[in-house]
Length: 457
Ligand code: GDP
Ligand code: IMO
Ligand code: MG
Picture 1 (cartoon, helix red, strand yellow):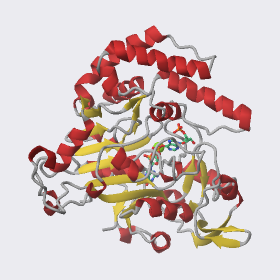
Picture 2 (cartoon, rainbow, N blue to C red; picture 1 turned 180 degrees about the horizontal axis):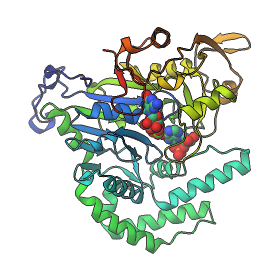
Picture 3 (tube, protein in one colour; picture 1 turned 90 degrees about the vertical axis):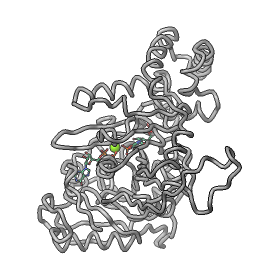
Picture 4 (cartoon, rainbow, N blue to C red; picture 1 turned 60 degrees about the vertical axis):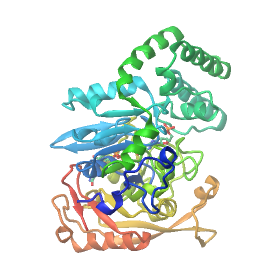
């Protein structure tokens, strides 16, 4: 249905050139991977879009982030929330892969798996593969995340509003080359213990109030190691084989979103990984030539959790209506999401970086009751339109948003299943968005469940 795939893309079954010295034919790069990415500040409905595509995928992979993500999937009236597990884990016929770019908190992973097992998601651990190169998030990383937030608040008067899942500290350990990976945990435990203790000491020298029961932590980690061991593979080789073996439909589920990207997002109010398309390559060992369709997910309005500039935010009745009607509450932290009008400046910016093949526009149904709907189409500084998305947050705080206003359709769209079921005013809204971004809208979401998705082509 929607994972575009054609047999001509899958001719190669040759081993890597180094093994035989035989060059693979040109333009024969193996299977193409479909990538799903958030085009705003997260919580666009990626989980739902991945679930839809995952029904026919052979593999669903996470490439970055950790359990800061919260992806909701609603199937047959049952609601699942995934944090570290790829949303495709629901599909009992597909393999889920956690790639090297992900940071894994093992207690979080097993807690999530066990919780879903109780909900009826049997056998998840049999179909989960974990890269040996993935970095570990330790409990003390999470404590340090909290300490850093307190410090930011004290020093700068504001924090980032992180999820306190230890994401920033774990990626910092990775970048400073003191981090520990899955392969270290499964290797010589004595060596792992020494490096773990050194890492603890390093953080304690920065945060003297940090107390860690090292022996207790190591004991628990040793237990987790044995539970994890059967799932662990060399992630690069596993992906290489998946790309170059028999035809396979491979899906990558982005976590977080473009405006939270460490390089391209609203820095420093961002997460610590690349949530744009490059993250799929670096976080899974996928060569750029194997990237096929890149689907961007955008809500029909905008939300943001945590601190940071939000030019189209509505601190008024419209914002409150979006928040309550859209049940805009964070899946990971339970915080209320800030709400505002759809900002097409940010979606176009996400498009510049990701070159989306098509967009999934979610939560159109939430707009059903509005008299009028606004869309941010440009930013102005000192009365003049600016062509770019500002890097500097002081500048972003100063922009004035230029809006287009649309009449509301005031009709319940939740039962719509095809384009013609939508009221003309809603169609007009969708077509305007499509033209403005310059990317086709392939799906329109009108409800939480799997079937509440209109496929346009
Ligand atoms: P993600 O992090 O991008 O996967 O998104 P979240 O799961 O954090 O938040 C999206 C929320 O919107 C979830 O509660 C979804 O069930 C819900 N959702 C997704 N698509 C639609 C839609 O088209 N309409 C409605 N009403 N809810 C939706
Ligand atoms: P999904 O995948 C929404 C935000 C946090 C905070 C900032 C940094 O569900 O869309 P972190 O804990 O990553 O250091 O927090 O990033 N954030 C998200 N907001 N959805 C997410 O993920 C997010 N992941 C991180 O709220 O502002
Ligand atoms: Mg979410």
